[in-house]
Length: 144
Image (cartoon, rainbow, N blue to C red; front, side, top):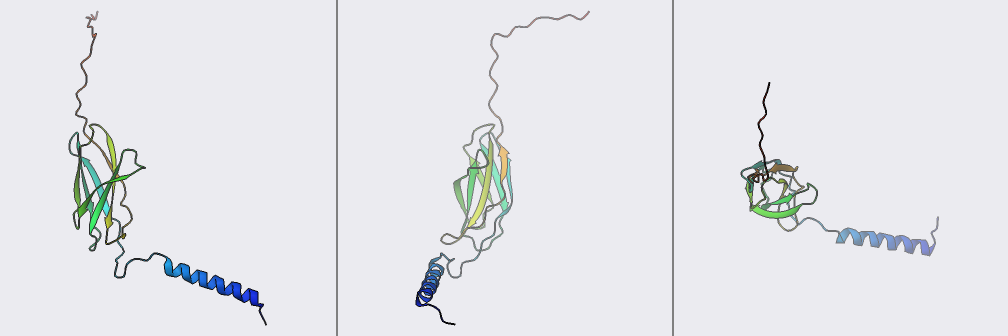
């Protein structure tokens, strides 16, 4: 069976393109370890302006842990990083009586990062005193 020259050139071009893509795809650094998601994340209101976080470190080679928060449970932003093997964080400066959502993930060298933990949430304690009623009247009611 004989192939046309144009067919051979197209096949060779496709092969070179495929090999080029494989060579240029980003790969983890040599010796990089795959990181696993931290587990058991809990969030507990500590006051009207702080929430305490705790999680289980599932890695031995992470360089830090990133902590993210949200007020809607969907859009998260990083608020802090803590060092290797640290498993607690106190989120402070929060508003009273507000529900906050958190997630964490382990970070390694370069762009190596674990999947996110499950999301945990807590509502800060409501420490705002109720306002004093105005124009309040009282009347006696008798029974009988």
